[in-house]
Length: 208
Image 1 (spheres, one colour):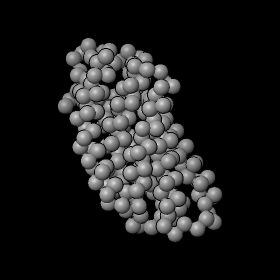
Image 2: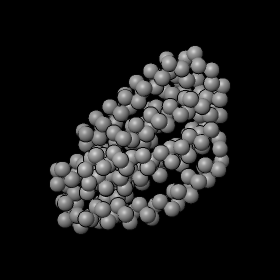
Image 3: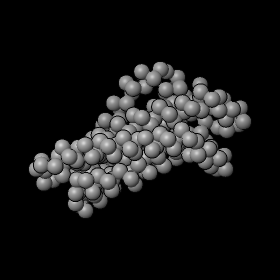
Image 4: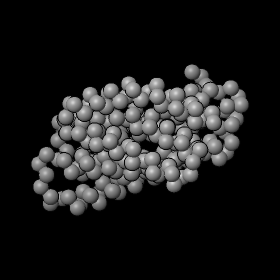
């Protein structure tokens, strides 16, 4: 547990992480503002368009985030150092999972209130969005870890091709934000299935 905490602490204190997080937040905030002016006169009583914008922007944000998860460690030689110092691939995965989960949560804390302010989203829809993000964030964190592990082995171009695999999860998250309970159950099921799978797969990719 101590090794995981040290790895996580080092990742969170890296200037590259803080800079990336700030750039992503400002970029998505800019998109929200642009869309806010565009949709100012559009009638949308069920607030479907703002919810879709939130999740599409979220997906764009992830596209900037996930290549960096292992990239700096591999480029600087830290990954080899971790494995040489008997830090297991499982411990590296857990620290990176927490790293991504914290990054996504920080973005949520900033961007969801901003979206609600710009689009005047009602409380019921806001509650649904919060529930959807709480359930979806662990799935995204696990998938990002897998994709980032793949990027260690393949080119950046192939990594971009992998990104559309997040679309089904994003669609389910959008449906959950509309209050559709079946999508929440599916997302919970994906969490349970994906946890052991992602740990083992990322472990193999990291060790290779």
